[in-house]
Length: 514
Image (cartoon, rainbow, N blue to C red; front, side, top):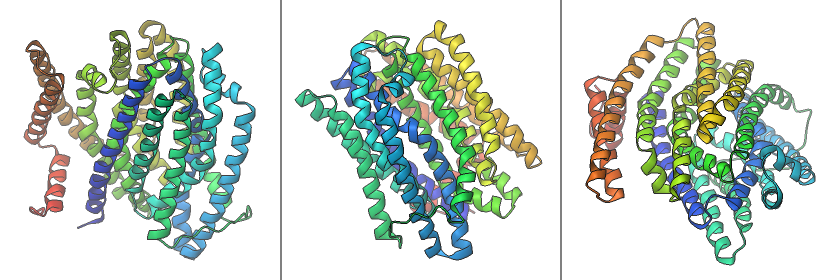
């Protein structure tokens, strides 16, 4: 079995674990919605939980993206022991950085909340500030955890990420229930901090039990590899900061659209992000080392094949998922978030606006990682700058007309702009990509997906007239749609479909590829 097939198998295993983790994540939001309907408390929690991500998420993205190639480079040149010394140095440096960020956050908490939610006033502002002061302590573990995440990916322990997701969601769900029982909503934020700590502890335990890494306090800013890591990370951090600012602007505008708008946007994005993480992150996470390896060897023919393969495999699920979620947006939202009709309506339209951009987000994510593997972080930064400008313009143009849906739709459209810029630039750099193969697969997948969407829409509408169980209706619609889609891509002979079948057969030892 070749390396690509092994990675695809790893992607399938990771995909299954990610499904479980993301379902638990949606269950967490559903429980939150059950105990605390959209409003004062949920808005405060959503804002508080997003601020640590805003403050350190921009740095974490750069660290994870640069840690793996630098760590790999050190192992190849000087061995594992030297690489582990570098990792110790990186861990200590990052922890010191998070202490500084925590101090800054505690000093300027109210200002940070106002930046993230310009529309908050009075009691809403005071509660968000109190929640944020607690949530900021998650910074202390998030920074170190980001380095361990990169380390686990390098060691091919892809299962660690979804497992830590179980721990985080479990801690938050428990804290939501307890907070409601004792009538102290702020306990939810303590649950968030505890969950972040559990994530780190689990990753450390796995590193110690399944590898030879041992932490030793080390601070050496003269380390010859720290400077290259920082130089590589800076453009990525800048690019990530643009993305974070993009989300900040969306949340800030949302806070001015109504008392429940921040929570509505959050619920819609949670469902959309679950689909994105499941079908895109699992593939790119597993295949990123292969992309790096091909780029380092200057195997550009192989690199082009791998990129096309990842995009086609992603399309195989993202395109039908986009149409499926769009058609069944109302029952999906109702399943996870039972609310008044008006709140449900706004979550549904926000979800549809976000789902439209799934394909663009997916392609962009793949292309960004490809540029990083080529040691080019400037091009993704340029694409992100253009994307955020488009998003801001569209936010102000669409929000007055479409309310929260205008914000999510603006983000979706701008994602396609970023993806197009990256694709054209990469194609020029590599003297062409396998565009014809990509278009061929995407076209066939789209035809099968549209057929699926029509069947799902018709069947769901018909079953509604029979007044059968809501769950039964949704389940039958999904099963029927899935069956039509599988038959469609089989008839249209989508190559990636047969690749997946061969992998499943091999995994179950039913047969082997001829």
